[in-house]
Length: 569
Image 1: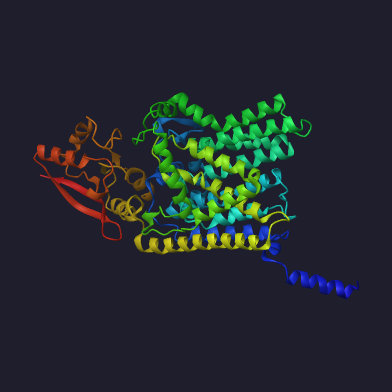
Image 2: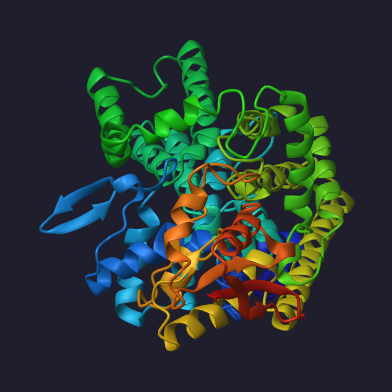
């Protein structure tokens, strides 16, 4: 064949190449992941100051970071801290949440100032890290587990087709985008850390590199310190990886990764080192251990941890909500991708029918994680599934890639899968954009309302530096938004949502005769800790005083959220 004929034949091959073959070129997956990352960043960084700052964002990162930067006394959780060169460093921000977000926020706030978008940029970058590490974990699995004739390396690219699809299905998801924007609220640090743990663990199984096992153990320990519920993923993955290693040893002892006593000791040390603050916290307070022990039967929020079937039904519904994205009502509307759960189910069932061994491990990991989530020390919050959403994307991505890969795959099947993936991503993106439109109008609802901004600024610039909080949702938010100039005093008591504790009236009574004191309440329709308002009114009346509503702070639709009261003779 002449050189000219070869050129024309090559041109015809390129012209007739399918979209799959073009994207499956060496640079195609890299470009695809880059585009998905840019889409994610564009969707998350838009109007980053909305919705309003949630209490947990301030309490679990903002306040302590602000205190460390301004030199103010650090309000450590349960008084547990580590002293370092005169600094009192917080160990934990909750009994089951570490202070990692505090330390990650420090450099950003030091560079850009104390503000809401400034704080949330850290969470957005955490989401981007989760997206990229998700690809690494899925691509590593795809290289490790070729079975049944499925080509595990369909391209020469370091990014697999499975990894690209997983990232694409994740990047524009309403759940992932808006959970990442308020990542501290959902402790989204657990996502990249768990993906890192899985990636390095799979890398050790594939290559036998000792450093990979050490890094996997370190990432797992760090994920647990970030938030204890990371054990939903870390524990099942450890069991599955251990079983995989035993299977490798049984089939081919010479090729199985070597597990020496020194490597085991190194991995255990790497796992424990990031847990040192958690261990120190419990040495000082016993908080985590007592919280777990007190939740064996019933959690703080009243969840029956023995009702496994009932909890499973709730968690099952939340899996669908996470995929659809129709749980973000507090943004001002409800939008959804109704096809996402159906497509995820179709991909998975079809992959099980074609090459079940390829999809069984990630599906089993997801199932074990859901089983672990049936127990809670708090409540069955859907935000917990920010941790599991990468597993959903990974399972769907691996299933779709299983259908695409291999020489026996029919072109119509490939085209159908590609169309389904594109439709999934497009519907996710459309729902996310509509949520942004709703948010621009609402400013956020309820605990996410931007009314908290108006409240904090009013208190700050009116010189009301020590208001008395008679309900939840004021102290941390106002302290951060006022840069520490307003320090609400929480009087309401955390003992019970339904009733004030026996000492509440006694705590409140000494403040009532002073007419300069102001009291913060939530509007009747927005109450969290019940009956504090009634006790406030009764105690004032018993002293011959009259409570006066000085000002209310509504969300943008006019519904009152916060109230500022005084007591007059």
